[in-house]
Amino acid sequence: MSIDDRLCRVCGESINSIVIEDEYHVLFHCVGYNDIRNMYVSRETAVPNVHNFITILKNDNPKDIVNLAHFIYSMFKTRQRLDNS
Image (cartoon, rainbow, N blue to C red; front, side, top):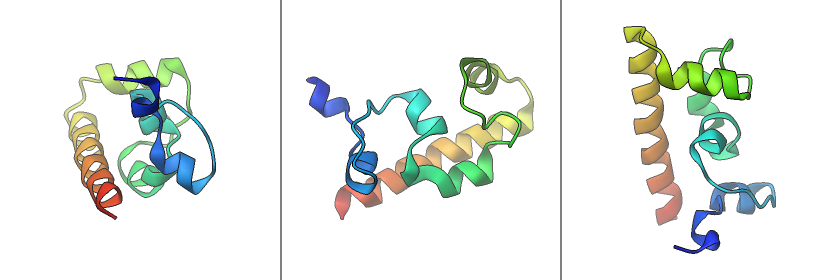
């Protein structure tokens, strides 16, 4: 896998930004997932920083775990639609 395979195509096409599409980028920054981020990530933890990233991933609150699962599922569905267009 080359570095080009890891670049975020959504941000590259939408805002002409060259960024690595990693978990942090998807959860906090990618413009393609703003709507679902607003639905499933609480405002308190939506501020992009390492502490909030770890808090989201290590959360043991059942409601927050379900919201993270919904975010991931919706993100993959959105990505699939974007890849097919």
